[in-house]
Structures are given as structure tokens and as C-alpha cells.
Image 1 (tube, rainbow, N blue to C red):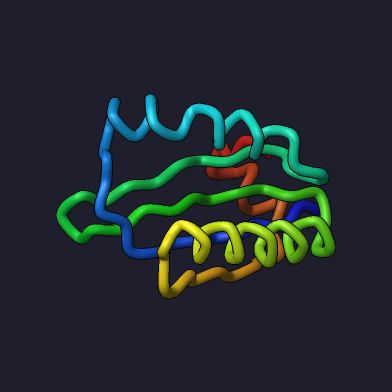
Image 2: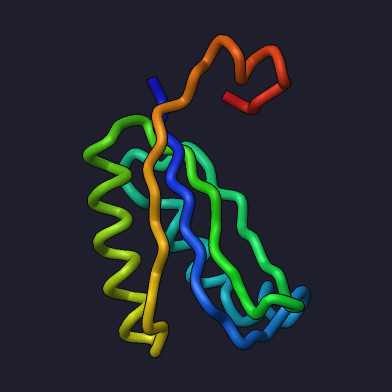
Length: 100
């Protein structure tokens, strides 16, 4: 059963294409994280927030990533990281075309 990790934090930019250029190396690193199935990057310039929605194969992988990523973000100057792990209901999610 997969597990979803939701992360968000205050972020001052860059946004859009600038974010893509600035964080490409980070994205490539995240792609190699143990247990990661996929990540969707999120950004809300109006609210000054960014983050991501991740799908992991198990809870230990999601928990380990959240701990590591929180420490990494704080080293970048982020003061508060919101992270939540959810169990995924496969049957209902597949009805609504989730990429599981």
C-alpha cells in the first residue's frame, strides 16, 4: 500500500521557470530517494508557499524522507515545515484516476 506525504512551507521564490532552473539539481536528487514513487511540486506565489505531494512505497521511507527534507529546508533558512503522511485508499483513488 502506498503512502502520501504532503509538505508545505513559506517560500519567497523563484517561481515557475525560475524555480525549475534553480531547483533542477534538487529534483534530480529527490528522484533517487529510497521508496519514492513520484513527487508533484507545488507552488503558490500569491501565498508565498511551496512544497510537494509525494507518493512513497512505505511509511518508513516517507518518514525518513520527511526528517531529512525538513532538516535540509531548515538549512536553507525555512523556519517551519508542515509535513503529513497519509495512507492511500487505492480502490477509491483508482476510481478517480490516481496515478498509482
